[in-house]
Amino acid sequence: MDKELFEVGIAQRKGTLGAEYVEKNLAAADDFTRPFQEMMTEWCWGFGWGDDAIDAKTRSMMNLTMIGALGKMHEWEIHCRGAIKNGVTKEQLRAIIHVVGIYCGVPQALECFRVAKKVIEETGLE
Image (cartoon, rainbow, N blue to C red; front, side, top):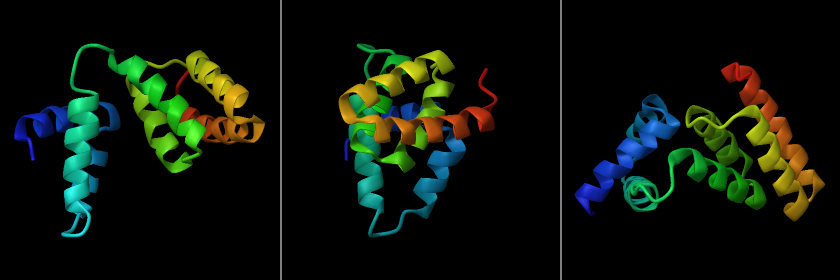
């Protein structure tokens, strides 16, 4: 493990998803899942999010589009919360979902809208 990338990654991960969520996931990791949690934190969040080439808000918008395209709605909800934390607006969420609908189909856009409405209500996003 690259300790420096892991430290960058843990800071990025907590900054987007929230310290409580990240710490809960790491604490729940066992011998079976811990190596993946550590590597994912290092690779995705340290390597993938750890530079200044793209700001966190834009990365969140990219993630929502890709995760929405994959139809991974549990992850989409988590990243929707993170995107709001990173400054993504309600209008931008709508535009992201429109792109998902255009390229991935109406049923997938409807799923994204369903989850986004729940997150918007829970977070109080105006």
